[in-house]
Length: 425
Image 1 (cartoon, one colour):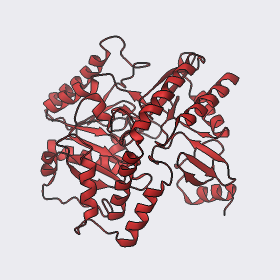
Image 2 (cartoon, helix red, strand yellow; image 1 turned 30 degrees about the vertical axis):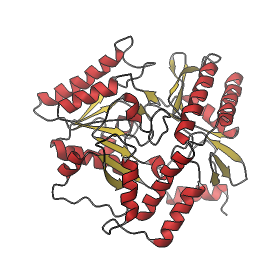
Image 3 (cartoon, helix red, strand yellow; image 1 turned 90 degrees about the vertical axis):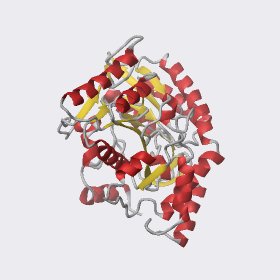
């Protein structure tokens, strides 16, 4: 086995320099199990941040499904195969009526790129509305619509066809008071009016029901429903990006958009969908799918292959069999309550927010984002055996989005060690 330094040296020699590693002292992880990771020295770490391994690292039923299908068949989707159609049927059964057509892809970025392509085909327009601080993927088309990227280091700013709405947060957001939701909705209406004033059509509004890279932000009540109505009324397409928050993570609902009482035209998903296996999808309406059937075939060499679909089906089965959505609600509510009590003891915590097992702790010092303190705290927590990360436009939000098997004992350990670190400051 290569040692720590040898791996770092080989990364520096053979991997792109824009690929970073986590933590000031990188970890050499060699094994995963449920909500835990183990390094080369045998140290165990509680994984509080890896929402990709949705049902737990190396879940035996997911591993078994992949192995068994690989023994039988793995090929493209131009042959008749039961695996893909059965999985598509089960996946769309989790959606509201009308969202019943699947396009399978390999990553969240692929899914969002395809969703944009479908929306642009449907509306004959590229004019896209997004939220400030949003991140929707690493393809060039998605960096263009992701302020988190194009307004960050190395970015070239917002393209003319992208219209940015102020980040809708109650704590440090632009608007305050009883009418703050309506004020953000008005920004959406203003963007629509601006697009139409140039003689163009609205293409799409793409949004997460709970913002991830925006800082684990809950949207104002009513914002998503009213904004979707205005976009649809203008002939635009509403895209719900569920890549970070779908598959029961929010606890109260299987999909994030359901918690806002609205139905999009397109839903994109990935990350947790394959529990680490590269699997993602676009689910849409029959009308959107038929419009996209314009003579140019959409084909994906690996998207929807039998192994991927077997893995996806196993993940759905485990979520149901192990009551993981219910666990996310119970444990997430318990953790939020404990963190809010911790907030009362430490001035560094400006706000605790989230839903289910998708939680953010925003750190503030002297009325300014405490990015340095957040980074230090994450590294200190790693030294105590708990893995966290930072997020948000100012990188001052500690994000918590663990595997869904995370339990109350894990929550207690997390709060206890956060308290220990902040008490020493």
